[in-house]
Every structure is written in structure tokens, then in C-alpha cells.
Length: 145
Ligand code: RB5
Image 1: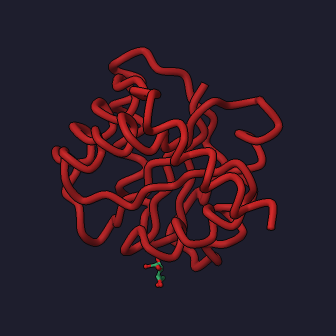
Image 2: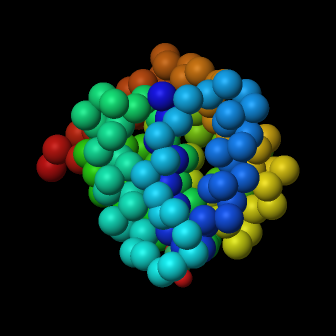
Image 3: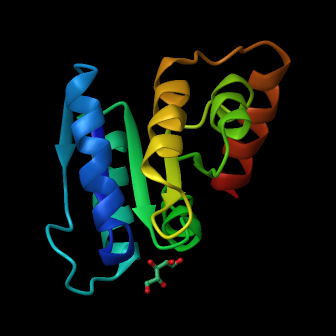
């Protein structure tokens, strides 16, 4: 189960990605926003990430205007590794090497076709583990400080 959310700057891309998730048979929960009225991206990030940390969802897709603000907010939640991506290589390697559990994108930056490719790479790529696990453990240790 995927959680998807956006602020007003990412609303339009979120709606496109939802259609893509439906086409590929991926279940999701949409926590909003539900129109282009202005909302604050930290509120969306917090609610979405809590669905991951409490086990209701295993991954997330978050979108704001740039993808930056919502990724900054998401990464403040313990256990969240959010990656702001604008290219396919990053979307794939953040799964392989960083075991990212949230993909962030900029609705004012990324076109729907590229976003769909990034979503597929992100959702379909498994973490490599090995030496990368040690580095993830060090990220987690920073979180505990
Ligand atoms: C909202 O206008 C905009 O600041 C937000 O969507 C995002 O780009 C922040 O990083």
C-alpha cells in the first residue's frame, strides 16, 4: 500500500500519478490535498509519513512545487528516508543504495511522463543491502542523537 500526498503546487501531478498507479494495479491512499487551494506542505508530509511509520503503508509519494520543501519535512519524521528526485537514475538508485521509503517530486518541475517512469523505478527496485545497510544504520543512529 502506497500513501500519496501533495500540496497545491503538486496537486495536478498527484492526480496524474494516481491514474498511473491505478493502471499498474498499485493500491494507494490519497491523503490530499484535494484541490488547488493553498495548504502547507509540512502538514501533508507529516500525515503521509505517519502512515508509513505506523505500518499502514510501506512507501510514499509526496509532491510539492519543487519537491524540496515536502522532502525536508518528510525527512524530519523518524524512520523516513525521503528522496527528492527529478531523474530516473536517482529514483532507481535511491532505492538500491538508500532504501528510500518516500519519493518526492516537484509538480512544477517534472512532467507526468517522467514522473510515471520514476514512480515505476522507485516502486519496482529492491534495496541492495550489504554495505549500504551499514550506511542506513548510520543515518538511523544520527536520528537517535
Ligand atoms: C508552495 O508555493 C511552494 O513553496 C511549495 O509547493 C514547495 O515548492 C516548497 O518547497
